[in-house]
Length: 280
Ligand code: PDD
Image 1 (cartoon, rainbow, N blue to C red):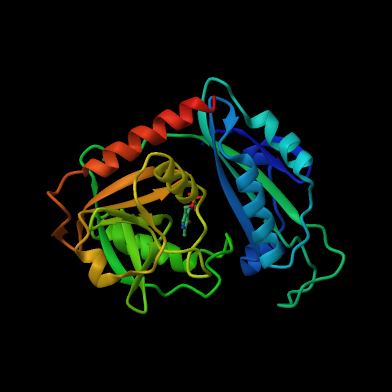
Image 2 (image 1 turned 90 degrees about the vertical axis):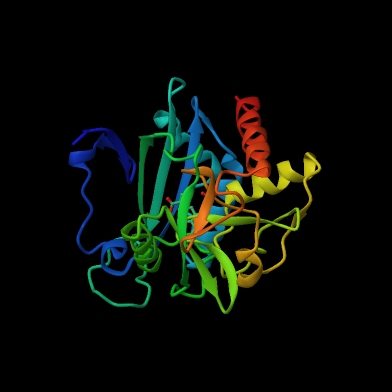
């Protein structure tokens, strides 16, 4: 295993020396939140937006932010590499409490962990990927980027076992998001994505795409998408920090559009790549 340097509670140390107590509430309860921030050529992509979402997630689980924005920037700085594209993963848990009790412990410092990994470009981008739909079995606070990801994991695993890249989740007849991604659909020529709510994670990639679409005269909608409408979409995409914009060409074994990545995807992907470079 690669023995890269990670950050844990104030120290930078080799991965195999980074140890967390078995009494950490992240381990015992999944009591924590995380962020995944792309770093392109050493520049953190939409860092302020990721920090804002981190703050919102911490507020959502009533855990005080252990660091100021300046401190976060300082902590992440040693991971940035001008020669590489990377993902920075950061996690904050409610720390180590010596009694296992569901209620919050008092006077316990949060556990802060950061690691990074090199971005490996997603294969299958040019031909598109397959997806399945599943009834969303997750909880009601999907807007919090919680480390408690068992629901998401079970959805994604089902997709993988069926030779698919993602599971699209349906909540009371509406398409909400993917197991680890937001979703976009081109319906009647309009680029549609579900509105922000507690049913989806407010993706940073999602926001960037909506913004770029508006600036490039692509008509957008943030209304709820009935599953029946999703099924007649001419294009479907999933978006995330780790995979960017992935076109889905087959949903539940039914072809989407002409079975290849659509024109709007090509246009948006070009715009997105150009935008990324413009920030360097
Ligand atoms: N996940 N929805 C869910 C449930 C997600 O897990 C993610 C990303 C997104 C997209 O958010 P963003 O564009 O900010 O990455 C939407 C990350 C990448 C992960 O869990 O690894």
